[in-house]
Length: 145
Image 1 (cartoon, rainbow, N blue to C red):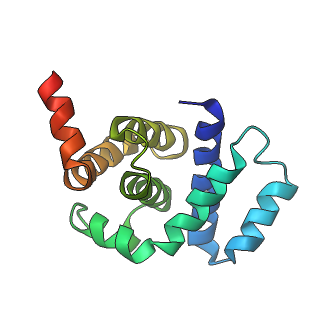
Image 2 (cartoon, rainbow, N blue to C red; image 1 turned 135 degrees about the horizontal axis):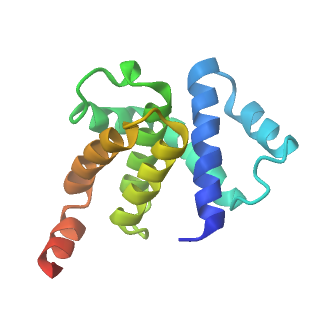
C-alpha cells in the first residue's frame, strides 16, 4: 500500500475528527488542510474522496456500525468513531482494495491516533463489517489458509 494513501487516510481521520467535534463545513476544513500543508505527502484525491465520502454516506455507515458496536455510535470515542467510519466507508465503497489492507490500515490509524488498546476495538468491529460486506472475499481468504 502506498505511503501517499496511508497519509491520505491519516489526514482524513484528522479532518473527520475535526468535523465531528466542531460541525464545521467540510469545504472549510479541507481548505484549512491544504493551506496548512497537511496533505503534503498525501494522495490528495484519495483524501478528498474519503473526507467527503464518509459524511455523504454517514447514515448508511452508522447503520452498519450500530449492528456491531456495544453502544450508540455517537457515544464511541471520537477518534475511534472517525477510524471506524473511515474503515467502514472503504469496506463498502472501495471494493478494489482488499479488506485486509483496509482493516490493517485502520488498526494502524487507531494505534497512531487512538487510546491504548483502541486498535483491538477497531479490529473487532471492522472484522465483523468485513464479514458482512465482503463475505465472498473473506470466505475466499479463509479457504486459502
